[in-house]
Amino acid sequence: MDDFHVAYYRVLDAFARGAIRKLIVTVPPQHGKSLGSSVLLPAYILGLNPDARVAIASYSATLASRFNRRVQRLMESPEYEELFAQTRIKKQGQRSSYIRTADQVEVIGHSGELFSVGREGSLTGNRVDVFILDDLYKDAMEANSPIIRENCWEWYTSVVRTRMHNLSQELIVFTRWHEEDLIGTISQRERVTPLTRWGQLDAPCDGWLHLNFEALKESPPSEVDPRAVGEPLWSEQHSRELLLEKRHLDPLRFECMYQGHPTVRGGLLYGDNFATYERLPECIIKRGNYTDTADTGDDYLCSVCYVVDNRYNIYVTDVVYSREPMEVTERLVADMLNRTATRSADIESNNGGRGFARAVAARTPLAHIGWFHQNGNKEARILSNSATVTGRIRMPSDWAERWSDFHAHLTTYRRQFRSNRWHDAADVLTGIVERELCRPTAGKIGFLQ
Image (cartoon, rainbow, N blue to C red; front, side, top):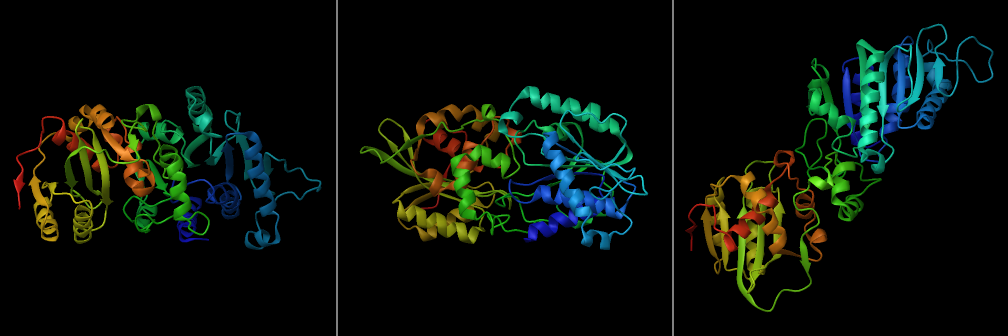
């Protein structure tokens, strides 16, 4: 077990004891989510309460039955019987009036039972105290089908919800596939609160608690998930290097399945439309830099060096994209300016940028450092200049490997502005095309040297 497994089981334990009524857990593939939620948890709940009626649902009846059989084998083990002597089930081959099939098992001497069902299966006449929904979509093809998503929602509202009562509990544990999957649809209609503090397990919650484990930590550290930014969830099985390779293959799919932040390809602003280059043009008329300092602790500092050719195409040459503190990024940006022989740099002064500009200027005696205040509306600027950004800006052919976060945030940036977690990379590229090709919307530049 890794640290995140300990946190995961602590939350499942609170759910089993009734402290949480509605819980969503999103976990990357192959991290042990189903073992905890659909094998150990049902056995534990029936051990604590032999009268509980527990249902497991998955995308197919076959998979749900497999979970059921694994729970049954666990419940007839000597170790389980020692822990939970009152919770007994019919032995294989034993004559008994109690039911034990692949899809249903009853607790001897009690009203408790465990039954399994595939998506769109029937539960007529069954009252459910605890419903566990584990991966209701088989793969991306199913999740991307509007018909299957609608059928899943119809089954959830007309079957799952109708089998529940005032004290019933729900656990939805998924790898995310689509922003309009069951979790996404529920989030649009009911209150969903991120689970970040252990105290939330003891406080009544009006709605759902949502625990999202990112494969590579991007959100701020919390009590429940205290990893540092960039740290993998389970490095022993899925190293940072392996996860970065997966993100490089398909950033959009990685954000969805591994980070729990799904989006739709048709809703992307830039996507994979950036042109790339192998070498810089011979005729360069300008070398420049545009820097946006981080507004909050969760934002990225984004600093981009570029050259402009005689046809006013813009070639990105180097990038600093970091959430390190200013004393670190000041040095990183200054080193990049010196390394690329950039002689003109514009630094946004909205949030401490003027002090940042002075610190960079002290380290770059040959560069002309200017600061400015951006007073244009960020959303309007980014959306209206998006075609110019993809049409005029060229990236190095290996930019995904060199600046993986920068690449991922741009290629998964959405047209629906408020759906984006970070705007820093898009904001800087927009600022560059405004500076070089369009009428700038920023305030007057002040030069330090």
